[in-house]
Image 1 (tube, rainbow, N blue to C red):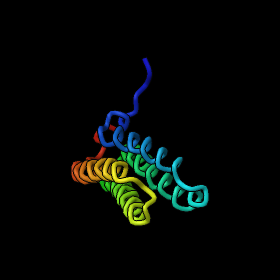
Image 2: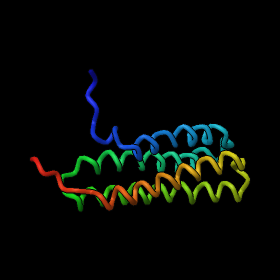
Image 3: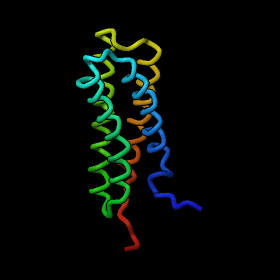
Length: 124
């Protein structure tokens, strides 16, 4: 049986990794001249969501956990900002925009709840 980290059980973590499939598809459809700037930025922001969730879940204090969950929240909002700009510049089709935006809203709401329920580790 394979070891499972605690963060891998979190629904918000699972959703943060699944949004990346859409972000990678979007990246692959970008014009070559925008892949390095806009494309790279949205990939980094998207990856930062799951990375901060995983790092935060391993922190010992609720305060440290919340700090990382709030960084993940900031990255999620960064993804939405980039999506909005891409939509305004006609770099993304309406269905992809709506799909990724809806996923980001779900992740946003889940991160807010996770941050509120963060607890200290009691057994160390």
